[in-house]
Image (cartoon, rainbow, N blue to C red):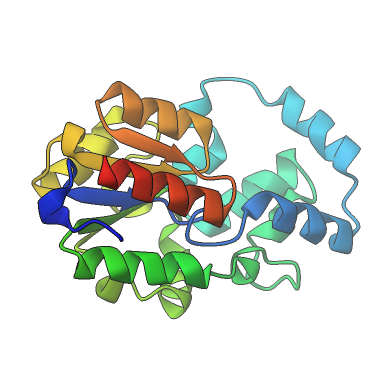
Length: 215
């Protein structure tokens, strides 16, 4: 029997979007590159030449809302030709529209709210893509709090975005569970005292979460 918030050691559950609420982005990206005829070997060589602080690379800056999608596409065409097809809305290989939501996760979140848990969305995302996300994910119906990296100027795995989310929820770290598919984000949340579930498959993640909530 699923546990109610009143009977749990946790008050809140925080969800990533891509790869948690949606299908895994990595296979989607690979298929998009293949369909576009992008040479992945050459793309990896170009990526290897890009050095510097990871937090200052173009995609990190895009996710913090410091540059626009158009700026990002221009930089990618110059430095990693072919990679831009994933984020160009005019391309038939535009990846964002292919990130379908997992209905079992949507049902889970609805159920958690009904059981008294505070729910939050914490996503590294892109400002211009937010309207598309809202078309597939009923954010207001699912979450008490939603945090988009591009709107707050910080991104996972920066500790400050986790603190910001916890403050908005009014929940201490040790009373919150965080679900994400990326190891650095999981590590950051755990370092702050949050319980975590690394998402690889929906069924595995849901089972792990329910066991945590039940104690």
